[in-house]
Amino acid sequence: MIKPVIAMLFLVALELTSYQEKIIARQGNVSFFSYTSVENIKAENNQVLSIIDLENSKIAVSMLMNAFVFEKALMREHFNESYIESDIYPKATFEGEIIDFNPLQEGSQTKMVKGVFTMRGISKELEIKTKIEKLNDKYILSGVFEAVVNDYDIKIPPLLAGNIAKTILVNFRFEYDPYEN
Amino acid sequence: MTKKTRNIIYLLVFVLVLLVYGLYNFTKTKDIDTLIAEPMLELTAEDLISYLELHKNTNDKQYLEKVIAIKGVVKEINNLNERHTILLKGGKDDATLIICDMNPSQSIEFKKLKPGDTVNVKGIYKGFLKDVVLLNCVIANKKTND
Image (cartoon, rainbow over all chains, first blue to last red; front, side, top):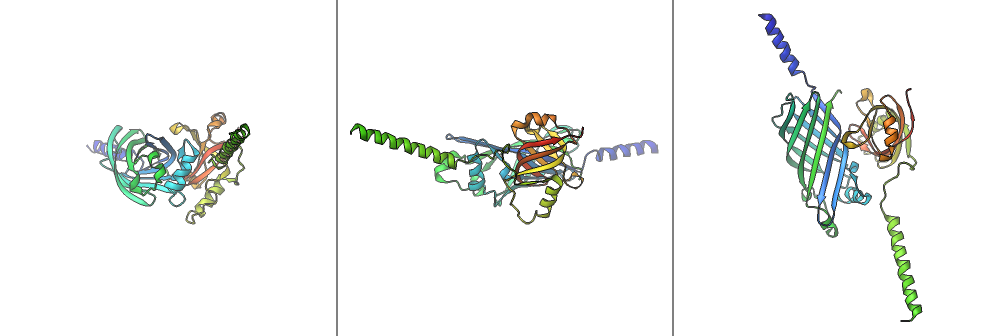
């Protein structure tokens, strides 16, 4: 009688410890698109850092604003020097929680990620629908959301107002591995 | 209008166009060509990370957006996000790495690399999160473990 109970307890313990406490994405991808009739602007950052604590479903994201790659060098210059002022505000961050996240569930699940996004020193609450895929130790989070330019006090000269959309489409994709440190 | 006056006007317009074109090219923002750029700093991956960790609270920006050359041991190579990327070992227990996003011209050199190789990489220093980020990297030369 005792043996099956011990075996069951062992299996439960194994299941509970079958995931790492924290997972890390060192090369997360964040890209944004601005569509206007004048021009389309696209940029991407492939070195976005993100860490998830699987115990409490907390997620943190941090990115260097000057690491966004643009099609044209002039676009990059305007973005960093005039709009984002990346020398003053070098990073954008997101801190939040994945709501009702089950880290043990293999396959795909769609959850809301709720948290605070900070850019140019301005923090805004965001709620982002996120697809979470799990295969063994690997997790992939992906999704898309819209950011309103005015929310972050980004000053666009009237002459260039027609070139930049009022709402920017942001895509993200993070591949997480166990965080061993 | 005499023929001479017309020719002078044509010449002036031509010179003006030439001047505007020259000025545009002179002031146009260009990407740094890491293939030919001389590095501002040359050091090992360990030394770079030690330096950055020591100065992380001092807002030290002297190497930001500058070309630096790093010698380090390859921890991992990958093609995540359809980018050729080399991760160099650096910090204590590999807690901090150097992420080198490769210039597309480095495709052949990149494919020859394997974990454990020692490489000299040159790239534009973008900053330091948990890891050091270098973009537009090129391999200066490579020393394998073979």
